[in-house]
Amino acid sequence: MTTGSGNGIHEPAFFAKIVSMTGKDKPKVVYIGTPFFDREDKYESGTKSFRAIGCRIKRLMVAKECTTPSPEEMRRIIVDFPDVIVVSGGNSLFAMLRWQSIGLDLLIKEAAMKGIVLCGGSAGCGCWFDTMQTDSLKPEACKLSERVLTELSAEERLNWSFVRISCMGYLNAFCVPHIDTKGTNEVARVDIAKKMLLDAQLESGMENPIIGFGVDELAGVVYENGKVTIMSLGKRKNGIGEATCHILYVDQRREVMCIPLTPNTGEAATLEELIERAMRSVEALQSPLDLIVSEEISISHAVHRRGVSGA
Image (cartoon, rainbow, N blue to C red):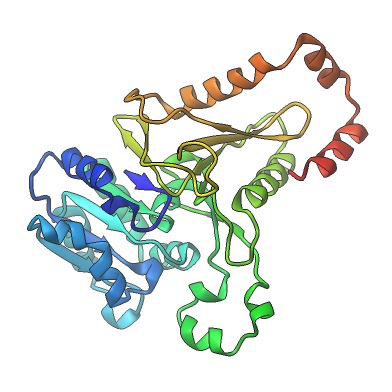
């Protein structure tokens, strides 16, 4: 169970779903705050709902060498103890690199195969996918952010870029948490996601589709028994439409489509089924003439159209 925003898992509807997935009234919880460099305040806010119902909680602190347990102890904490593992928001790039360097990624995979529930928001949303878009390079996301920010002018604080990073690979897609928002650099996440997806698709070749999966701030994604259910708690951040998830892909004309899924239907479908439906919905809106023209369009004209579209 993942959400677009960092503390979204504490929204009552999302939290109730997480608890129900464990099959226990008071599940045992492991909290991993690596993306926030194991900050105390983030631990408190990230476990508040579990503490409120009396859950036993263990905190795995691996951001520093001095707090990192032995491999044997880490395995006891991650694989043997919990019913649910919570991953915080924060610096996704740091977390992925750190987990890989100490073998934590493999232990989490073992826990997942055992049936332990995985959850989180923001970084804790995207980390389960093949790749994700992250703002890990922004000044606010660095370890000494408060000190760094005092050294930068207002203009310098805006001078950073989103990046696409490799993640755990449990879900075969490129994840874009917070897709309905802008970064602190005032750049819309969806616009950069489209460019990232197009660049990756053209580099790998059109015969191997790369799919994007965007998650709005107030949307939740339940992945259970190989199927996905989309939940929504309100409007999108831009005020247009209900918060949901979105399928992104590059079409025949080398343009990136972003198709919203219908939330709160209660229906569970495989990711592949959601992708197929999204693509069919676009095809149904195109006239036969549109399809003929798109097939006959030249490569040079397609490149020109891509530049104009802002994808």
